[in-house]
Length: 227
Image (cartoon, rainbow, N blue to C red):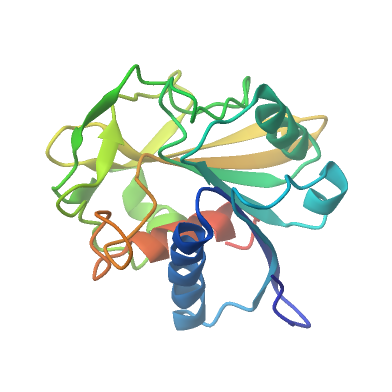
């Protein structure tokens, strides 16, 4: 799935779930990019029904957003770890952070710990931290509301070097965290969203009238060093 574009970000999405669900994440992200006039091209969109991309295919991506709702092998984590070490930015979203078969482990570049189980429905809104108030990802982001059945996890930052930009107001758990890594002399950016990535358009996810799409779009822009 490609979109012609002469300039701009080359964005990729790896949604290890049904195509219908992956399309929702891509559509919401693209809508947010279009609203802020960011030139982009969707370089690759994969769902669970498609073969896994190769390292060569990923090399064409300026930034990648990945999430999983199906069993994941260690090879997936190794592929994404290699992508990071090539100098490219990665955004992971829930449900990739629990210790079930959906885990995507990119150690030593994980930002959030892995949770033993779903915590509960994150039906509340998010709140911006002091660090997040001036961060480029949060520009124009008012809030994200979890909806009626959007899960978040018992995650916390892996260490103090990870910066929390936003958190769930009802639980105090991180919502959005970031970190820059120095890898072979390159600054490589990572972002993690503790958010079930599907919206209420297609599932019991985050409220589609709030800023979930904008957060995913701006996180991709940031890890791609566009902002």
